[in-house]
Length: 222
Ligand SMILES: Nc1nc2c(c(=O)[nH]1)N[C@H]1C(S)=C(S)[C@@H](COP(=O)(O)O)O[C@H]1N2
Ligand SMILES: [Mo]
Image (tube, rainbow, N blue to C red; front, side):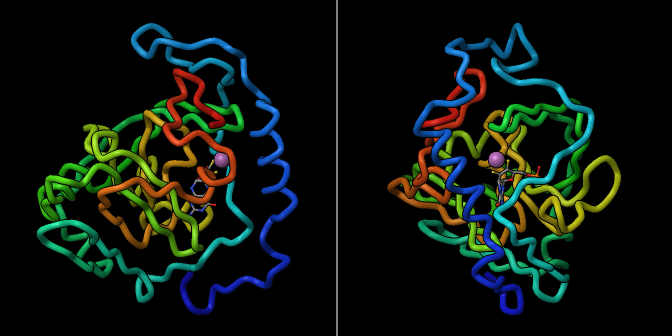
């Protein structure tokens, strides 16, 4: 967590975290069906919303341009540590994708601008043994995905949504976007990407959420 953002203990949404853990234990929201992304756009058990809800642990760190840092490290050939100017100088692309949150909302056609995961992979050159990627955030949140999931062509480190900078509540200045997985895998307030040889389940993955998080297979809880 960045200095100055340390929330008083009570500010963390302990009740919300407990409720979500209980839902995970009880298998709440499961429809028991699977979907096919080639056939259906809406994954099983989801409903379409028009807005973009905000979800976090109760801390929304104020990541000013001065505080921003992005470390790319772990088992890689080229470790990098970028400030915001360094990040903004990387090659940027636009991408349109849907979002699917485990709390059952989905929304369509979000227009993103950012750096593709493939650009990051070209720069850092993970060692051959690397199988997983861990995202670390300025609020202390972590989440993990497999390297092949990170390497999909629709995965981005995004800084604009629908033509505007991503604001503080949605994880600006830079957040992850992994559209084929439930949204808890898309770390907000991104601070570090760690390339690892063995898997390291993150915040929700160690609290009953599924490690893989494919919405089409309804991998909500694990
Ligand atoms: N750093 C950080 N990233 C996070 C979270 C968080 O608490 N901290 N929550 C996750 C969860 S559970 C969800 S559903 C999405 C919500 O993103 P949004 O608030 O932009 O909709 O962010 C994910 N990324
Ligand atoms: Mo979530």
